[in-house]
Amino acid sequence: GILSLHRFGYHNFQNLVKLFDRIIPQIDYEFVKFTSWVAGQLIHHPDVQESRYVYHLLTRLFEWTNSTGRRSRQLAAVELLASLSLNAGNYVVTFFPSLQIFIWRLVSHPSLQILKGTANAIQSYTNALMRYGRAELDHIMKFFVSLCLKLLNFDDPIKEYASLLLLEALINSNPTYFINEIVHITKVIFENLEESSILVQGQTYVVLSCFSQVDSQYFLDFISEEVFEMTENLIKEFPEQISKSLCMMCKTVPQFIEERLDQYIGFAKLIFDD
Image 1 (cartoon, rainbow, N blue to C red):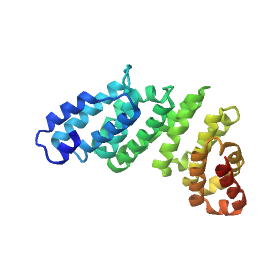
Image 2: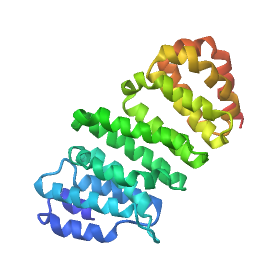
Image 3: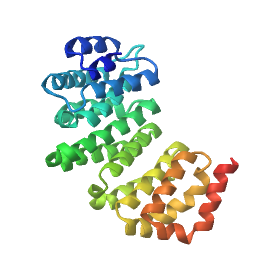
Image 4: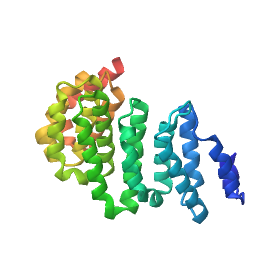
């Protein structure tokens, strides 16, 4: 109802957002995601009045990251950050100092849902940076990559998984940044792979596949065979993620796929037979 009034030109924006403020954050994930989408629509390409509300929402989501209670505040924070980055990215990119402060609380959270939401929010934020904050892009990417490497060094599967989720999001957003980082990052990933949990192994596969976007030749020379050997063991456990990675490699390294077409057809059969 609030969004409909806004779209039909209701003149008092302040009344609408006062009502909206009373219903966020929500408890159930579906409502959290829906209200975050509504927030993005309310401030889509904001004017002066709406831009003030963007800053208000950013302040609220930063507070949610440090709150507990019945409502899903941390989840609402990451969903709202993603929505604001998509719809008011020119304002959101200026809040990086605040993001630096609270990001650790999100990436070390035990909830896999919040970790996935955080990665999605960082991908949306990075996309906004590429449009509205190019001057700061390399500096901020360096911060995020350093954070990922720090998380990988913990002997904690949740933190390792969070690191790999973030790496996937960052590579997909800005693959060219990783041209000079690919050797070091893949070395760290391989060092942690052997003793990792099945959850971490599945996400490792996804990240290694993403590197085919960065440097296809390096991927073919040093990563592709390792990824290929992992496929059969992981595809039944993570059919959606592994399938998407295989589809990506069809685009980025088609020659590698063509040489192993029979095996890849076999992987497809494994999914359908399961």
